[in-house]
Image 1 (cartoon, rainbow, N blue to C red):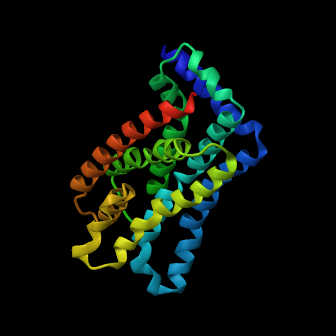
Image 2 (tube, one colour):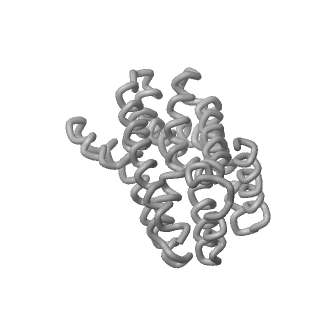
Length: 237
């Protein structure tokens, strides 16, 4: 069964390379890495007032690494629903859970790897490999939650573009927690990415982020299960 999941994952991944409009998004991580490794150090060297905001820049970079496959997979699934291809997946010899695993196996793993590399090459903070791996694994959940959330709500590309803009804002709203008094910042905990952001900030400051990571993992796992069920009810009809 695992072989079937991997084969479908590979087939699904090839779709990206056949569609020029999606293929272009594969260059986003390269641009992001260039900014973090070369552009930001030059800016902070020239403008020292930016140095206190370095943890926030890493936070933004980490979450932006998830946006490549969040957009790509969202558009692929919307297109399948519009063209009625989604209905054919109801008869493939895979359960709905196995189908979801096959669709997000590579996007999740690649997103995790991108963030592991980002933490390793960013020149500002020392983040050990265990902390790096934990945060990267949790952050990778953003991709399936984002994609399944949108595809549980929309019926076509037009609606999809509207919801993509809305979800992009929801993902980034917890950044506001960095600009409010300490006692108020966890009010943004209603947004799952808040716990990722707090974990990243704590890691950059070499502080314990165990509680943040645990809350984030629990919250995102529960959210993923709930959204997956909603997606399954609507996508295959």
